[in-house]
Length: 88
Image (cartoon, rainbow, N blue to C red; front, side, top):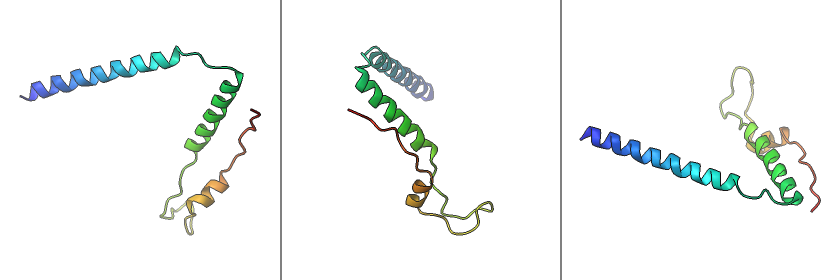
């Protein structure tokens, strides 16, 4: 009975990986769009990479940063970077 669930879960996971690869290939084969769409995509990627590198402060003060923890909006302002201006 255990082997049945193990094999079944293995087959389902391999099927999910196959579907993910098929979707990935379908997206990668699509036309990247005109210059405006590519500029927009680059701006989104820059904004997303900056967003993921910003970490929220810990509510518990650590030994390295004594004092009260800042709220998320203060942290966002401290790590704010200007995004490139887009002309559409």
